[in-house]
Structure formats: structure tokens, C-alpha cells
Image (cartoon, rainbow, N blue to C red; front, side, top):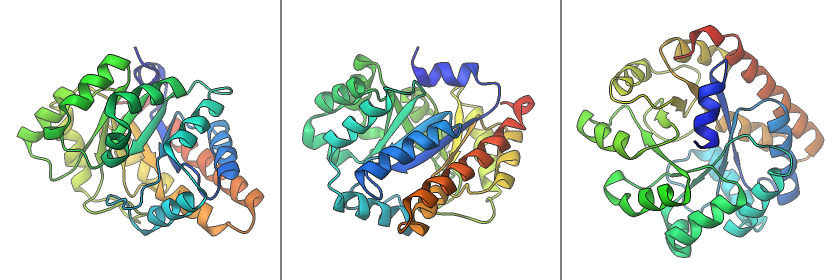
Length: 270
């Protein structure tokens, strides 16, 4: 059993998953942000490996990727960050990356390095299931969960294939398009939750556009097991680049507020 599976099985309320770009806005602040986010109550931490062409991300996270790359981030430094975090926490850590980064190092080598650093699962954003056979086999061999994206445009046939390969949890995309803060949820996300639940017993976590407590209740009420927040957190980082203390305080306060919103729904767990 992995940390991810164990967390979903034993949480008394839906999981709150926070996303940070490794190295944003700089190496030291990135580590401090991650530590404070964990202390503020996240159940799972998702860390993004900065990439020069993050096609799944909107402007907010694109700019975070640029800041992180300028700060000198590399896969090895990211693994060092995770290793540092592991000195203080045993919560699950998921790595979000792009296939070119994995392929350049070699799939098995990359996955073993990730596992040895303390990563529990990997999501390769631009890898379709048709090209994932080698990755899935290696993930199983080294003991990592392979996370897959499912969107509202995913067909039933395609969904069944994805479900057969995924482990840990399924990452459901709440909207069409790229990441970014949305004011309202699209109604289609509720249909997505229902359709995916018919095909899989894996935990369902919803991301893309989730930004405020009011978004959380309807998602959990319809059967989601977790919510993923990224752009709203990264936006707070961007707003306070000139004052790292305020940045960390504001991000921690926001995390606590969002986590509290999931805790109010402990009797609605899907």
C-alpha cells in the first residue's frame, strides 16, 4: 500500500491537495513555502517540475514555471527538495511533470530517483494512455502510483483504458482548457464525477479552477474524494514577490481556510 492509498483510506474528510511549482519564486522560498503549506494542513502535496512549454497550464502557472527555471531548477534539485521535506513529513507527495523531462533521463532511472527522494506518485501531463505502457510498468515495479488525467471530453471507451492503468487516484479536470482560477464551476464536472465513478473505485480528485471554499461543497457532495488547488496558491505567491514573509503567511492562511472547508464535509465522503 502506498502513502496515497493509505491517506485516502484513512482520512475522515475529503483530501485537500495543494500544488506548488518547485523553485518558485526561488529555491529557498520554495522549500519554506512547501513546509508551511504542509503545516497548514494539506493532505497531499503536488509539486510541479518547471518546464519551458507547460501546455496544460494557464498564464499564472506559466509565469511560475519561468520564475522557477530562472532560479535554476532541475530534476535533481527538485528531488533534493523532496528529500529535505521528507525529514519533517510523511504526507504523500505527487510529482507533476512533462514526458520530455522523464524521457531525457530515462524512464526507469527517473522513476527510481523520484522514489528514492520520497515521491509517491507521478502525473505526466502530456502523456496519453496509448503511450504509457512502459511508464506504467516501471511505476508498478518501483512502487510508485501512476496518476492520470480525465476530462469532461474523455470518452467512455478511453476512460475504461485509463482506469485500467491508473493507481493512487484519478485527477479529474473540472473544465475545458488550461489551469487557472475560475469564479464558477462548470456543471459538466458533476456529470464527469458520476460517469467516472461508474467505471472506477479509485479516489476521484478534482482540479483546474478550484479556488474558493464555495467550490468545495458541491464537488464533495457529488462524490469527489479530494480537491486540488494550484493557480490560486501560485497567484498569491506572485502577488507578494516583494515580501516573502507576507507571501508565506498569506499562502498558509489560504491553505488553512480551504482545508477547513473540506473538514466541514467529513460526513459526505464519496
